[in-house]
Image (tube, rainbow, N blue to C red; front, side, top):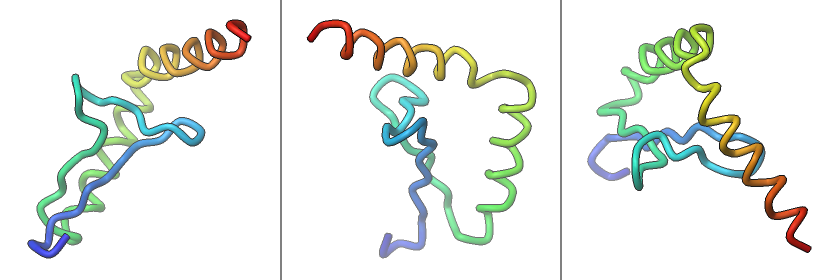
Length: 68
């Protein structure tokens, strides 16, 4: 972005995960902060904090396929 911020999305397949209601990106104030943010995301994954989001995304895909 022109103001120096970076929008970071976390994807499951081709879909961006909704990390909070209506929010599918993390605003990072500068490129220099990206390593810290990525480390925190990695720690969250290690602590299984993304499991519920991934289950919701996986079940969404199953619903779409079975409705045909």
